[in-house]
Amino acid sequence: MDALPTDWGVHVRVVFGRSLFIAAVVALVVPPLALPSSVGAAPAAPLTVGVEHAVSTARPGNAQGNADVAWNGSLFFVVWEETPAAGGPTQIYGARVQADGTVLDPGGILLASDEFNSMIRPKVAGGAGRFMIVWQIEIEGTYSDLGAAIVTSTGAIQRQWGLSFVDNGQTSPDVAWNGQMFLAVWQDEPDPDDEDIYGARVLPSGLTLDGCSTDACPNGDDPGIAIAYGPGNQLAPVVSAANGLFIVAWTDVSDPSHTTVRDGAVAINGYSLDTSGIPITSGPGAQTQPAVTTNGMNALFAWTDTRPGFATDIHATTMQPGDSENWNPTPGQPNGITVSAARGDQNNADVARRSGHFVAVWQDMRSGGADVYASRIGAAGAVLDPTGVAIAAGPRQQRLPAVATTGQALLVAYERDAPAAPFNGVDRIFVRIVT
Image (cartoon, rainbow, N blue to C red):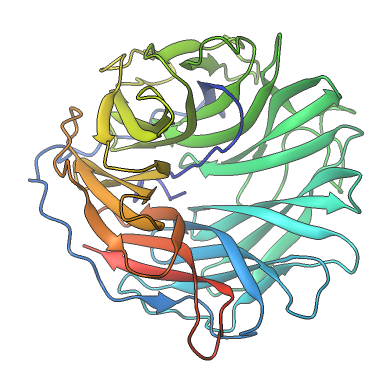
């Protein structure tokens, strides 16, 4: 997830559930951010793929995975989970990366660790010269809480705290920056048969405005902003930002017979205007694993789609979300456009803007093994690379891509098995600059 207005591209990934929803959250009464006048003016230049770098060469026997990446206006920040070779709980690490791909912290920055509890599923957003990282804390296998940290551009940990500490289990966090503040979102379990979506606004200082953190409950003993709730389960939220809004997407299982992508809005008072969501795609089959970004005027949603049958493809739609005064969640292509329908499965998409257009990256099985491919997508939804562009392909297994953007250059992070010394077979996180 990336800073605004320098970078409005915010990447997301969802893995579970059956139906997808999105909502908009207005953080405070602030004027809409100015739209770049050049949006859509620049031609969509072909993608040029840079060399591969290991994001961390330290602790070579440790396995790494689940990377995420953000841009804060001057630097990228990559986060990942890491499991010690000697055993023990999984930890969260991060590293700063320059716009040319130079890794500034090859040893990694330890962001979260515990003697007994694993730290998993890190997500990151950039803004105000900082990065906010959120993660899931597995409390000795019984339930989950959320952790958070603010990291400066120098790599210093400004603050680390427990983000959501209520009796319910909290899982699957994500975070975005809207130009004024961060919004963290998560899946909340009020009871074993009911999963909902909640969130909390966080200032660049780390001050939490909603819910209960390890510091205090600013609004009493409450779980945070109620974003999506109702019959069935609302699962695995992701969040982006546009025009001062936060756009939240989630997976819904209220109607398991038909899956849809939907959207709604949350008002400035923190209440969701439509907790059931509004359709974004009406296509058949199951839609899961959404990703969303914006180029300042249009939003792009991508997802994994099973409409061909048992194989999965990448589909997408554009949308003009408007702003807090004119929220207009109408998809440009209600049935979706096909981004990739290559042989084998395509899934785990992520998206970012690149000048006035978009780029989607995904995990691709056309060769029989897992590779990372990408395609440019025009501001109006035209797929400019229908056969895809190989970002990381070959005999190794390249999985779970994540992407962030400076507005022109992209940083793609992914995990792959690394058989050569010094890693000798474990999964590690690698990055490439794409221009």
